[in-house]
Length: 215
Ligand code: MD3
Ligand code: FE
Image (cartoon, rainbow, N blue to C red; front, side):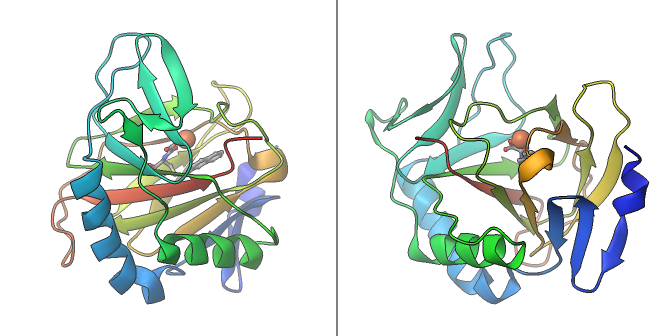
């Protein structure tokens, strides 16, 4: 499929696939609640650099909230109830996170989304995420909602094969992307973050993704 066919702006909801939508600045009204909630989360369950099964330490630091959290180590990728670093459950999802996730999903046509996991990624200049698919969730029918804050990143949106052509989509402070249906398993990644400090967050980018990981 020619992705460029979808790379147009349809009013406020920009389609980048048949079931993938960029909601530009959708999260801005929530930012005053989101930033303190992220600070509290990071105090309780600090951002950390995990190791991939291949033995590489991720340049992106991550933490989680909600009933399930995504982790990786030499044994593989998985969702866990317990934070392996703290030996305790992941912190609960802040109320403002849940409200934003449900509102964004509904705006993209996925009413009734109830995420049980929120993966929070932190990028500093140079950090990147290589092309991958999100396949550790139980139910591919539920969408994924992604919220970007801070420095702008270039997101790579590919196809169903690793070698498929990718399109570059800049994701700015407040942008929300919702991916579902046939777009849910597309390869995607993030180019190395460039230094362009953000007035509120400085030289970092925070991305959080809401998922339905369990059954
Ligand atoms: C497209 N995070 O955590 S969010 C990830 O900006 C991840 O931190 C990136 O990819 C980030 O797994 C991109 C957007 C995203 C999330 C899940 C997707 C895009 C997706 C699942 C399917 C297709
Ligand atoms: Fe991903």
